[in-house]
Image 1 (cartoon, rainbow, N blue to C red):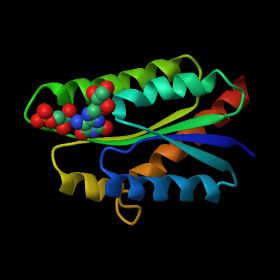
Image 2 (cartoon, rainbow, N blue to C red):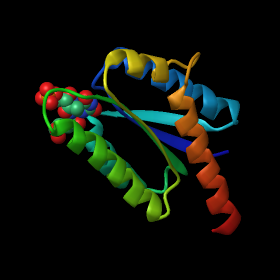
Image 3 (spheres, rainbow, N blue to C red):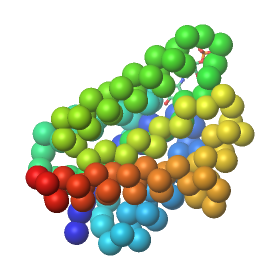
Image 4 (cartoon, rainbow, N blue to C red):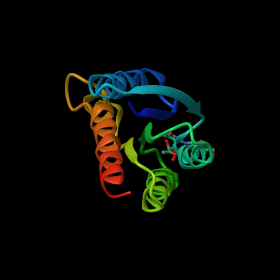
Length: 139
Ligand SMILES: Nc1c(NC[C@H](O)[C@H](O)[C@H](O)CO)[nH]c(=O)[nH]c1=O
Ligand SMILES: CC(=O)[C@@H](O)COP(=O)(O)O
């Protein structure tokens, strides 16, 4: 059984609750365990994963968050750098699923966070578990 760390950036709590539900359901359906930590925003997710990976506690990681475009360039920074940080960690060999929504508005976020609709939280969990399986196959 794998143990998965979910790192959630709880910037929009009601949307995160939907993402978490999908992620947790997918992990449990696959017969694995999980625990969750919360960080302030998506920019902090990669560093939290990096810190957690220094222990031997976790087999895979899922980053969850919602980044909604505002008035400034900050959207590009938050969206791009959180994704780049997770990709860098994945290229270092961590099994990671990226469930950070980067959207134009709340309606787009809601459709993607809802497990009954696009279930991006569940999708990210399945991606992390798929990468873990690859690492165990070739590692
Ligand atoms: N605007 C959003 C943010 N911004 C906060 C940053 O992620 C970060 O916490 C801050 O810059 C301090 O380092 N975060 C989100 O997750 N979603 C947003 O829409
Ligand atoms: C994604 C963001 O950082 C954004 O929500 C911040 O809004 P603004 O660009 O209007 O400051």
